[in-house]
Image (cartoon, rainbow, N blue to C red; front, side, top):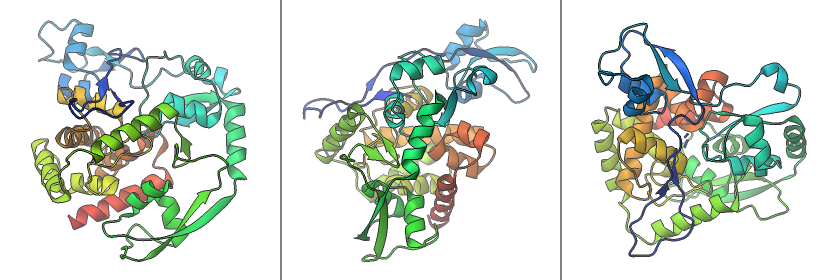
Length: 373
């Protein structure tokens, strides 16, 4: 995943007697400030809260709604949280900054490391605090010189090609995660399309940039701080040493959870298969966890949507997190394809920038898998 709020990652393996959990640190109810929304026909406070990543209680308190928000008049103006930082003056920043769109698994630390800028610089340019969290699709301002230098370095980087064999249960997304490349890169290197069927024993070319340093903290062209990589390793080790449902059991759990949340089970199953192969033990270097590959920051958002703390290391909670996120996306997106793209790229980014090439491939793959479920 795609997405896109915070179960902070475990920083060391958990002892056997401990309750598996990811630590939650709640942030401000409106980390980017408030804005005015005008109520339209069909709006209700619950849907408004979900769309703006808030809660009914927070909206009732901010707007002093004496009736608890049960009756909203069309045309009424409400204060709602911004879902991203308020835009700075375009004229003031255009000459000295570039924009980076946050992808699933990104942190401010990983972005700073990738573009070789300091965290205080990012805080200042984006007018956000150290306690703020970022969401897939959010735009982050960077020094233009740093963005140009990174792009120039990347353009001239050498690559190496290796050959691997397809194993039982492999999918293109699973191979991409294992090899630290994008699915789009695999498709291009092997002349495949998202409709191609893999065969056990089939040879695939994997093209990766040549790196001078260890790449264990790099995935899909992004380098993650040691804290994120260590948290992912700790969570991976924990899951490897504790029981997890089989793929058959996970499939049944996803089907049941999708039905409870009013989702098409075939869509939920397709996304989970693409993300993890229905494997709760999957943890990416970006600390995307479990069957639904939910990153800790999205886990906090999912907890707020679910109305309780969700533990991403628990298979049922992980699936629930994926379901409530997908439900929110389907309610806010204009089409099923846009909702799927939002799970991977971030809905705000999809609606503002359109689907990136790898996002389009992801959506096509999900729709094909969905038709086969």
